[in-house]
Length: 78
Image (cartoon, rainbow, N blue to C red; front, side):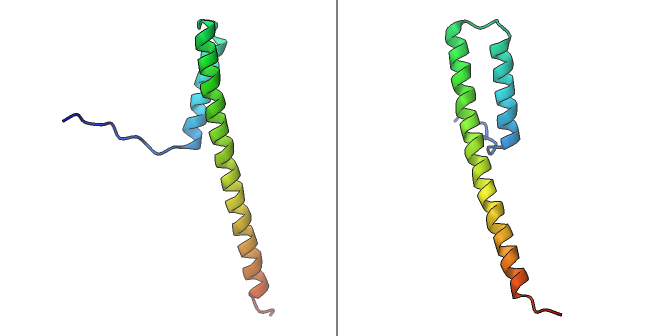
């Protein structure tokens, strides 16, 4: 039975680091055109995932702020 390496949960910071690595590879000038396009596509997909993640977190923050505002309105005035 082969052991599977546990995949770590997706992390925004790790994804950004991956994009930075891909960009460095592209900018190195050491890749052929097909590899450049492949790395570019990987970077674009990762950035899309990051953008979706940030949008989801923005919406969560808005909900929290809205809930805090409602709680504040419900407090009796002193």
